[in-house]
Image (cartoon, rainbow, N blue to C red):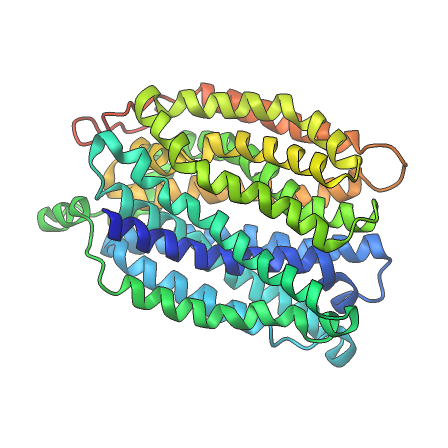
Length: 428
């Protein structure tokens, strides 16, 4: 289990490094380089628009790779998704700017960001199921939480590299070539991840399905026909997690540097410190889910998110590093109370023959609802005025309450797991 969990963690870390480094670049530098004819705010919105495209393609990736995972096995998904995301990320680092090739530059960004999201949409389902389906049932949430640590590691790697580059290079050098370095590094990380995953075995549950010839011929059709309400509920339930995380990790960086005048290195340090603590606490939160239940933890995380959004915005607006860090930390701990659990929770809601498709589609559709639009909406709501952007806090609070209702409508899957009881989800 330790080897399987480590390989899953490493893979998700690498893929989320690719995904997050784009978000940080969008907040710090892509606007003026690829949308120079726009005003500063409009340029940032346009850069966040290309950022959002990656979320829009993630559900499509979960459909494509989910079909592979449910029909041919979880293991092939891990290789194909990592290869696609790695190649697309390296290519982003090679795209000329608007000054060199004009409108073709942002067009290429859109295409490559779409491919990034396509690969990441497949990665989560493959990595989570590989771990969850190997795990002992009474420790499934704990072991399945390790792929959920991967995003924290990927974020720290991506922003650590960006922090070092912004601190060590002049602004001109960073805008000229420095921002490209993390994208080029993605190629080496992808090669390492592929080597690490080469020795992993297929999951016992899929091997049983294959031996009995019970794989789904059309997984998506079965999910739509028999589990559509469950997919919509899980997407709505998880939306707040995406909204909170990308408010902290993407929008806050832009708001802090452009509106509050805080240096990018200080903003990155505050966010990275909060993400590091979140990553360390992830398995401990998952252990609570093995004891008290998945749904209970998710409801607690939603309630904490709803209560913390206004304090978080107030602390951010102080522009004082320690207070901003505390605001970010409270938000991310509320977020992780849910997301440490969902790697076990979502697979348990679906029967094994459509699990890769159903769990991944619900998870990535939540990214569209909560992650794709949040930086854009938050930037628009915070434009103008000198006081704290209370509109951002109100928006996030509403999203948290909607997610709370969705979690309340989902069943508990119980720490005992799914071998003895394979729920078919919420009846259509």
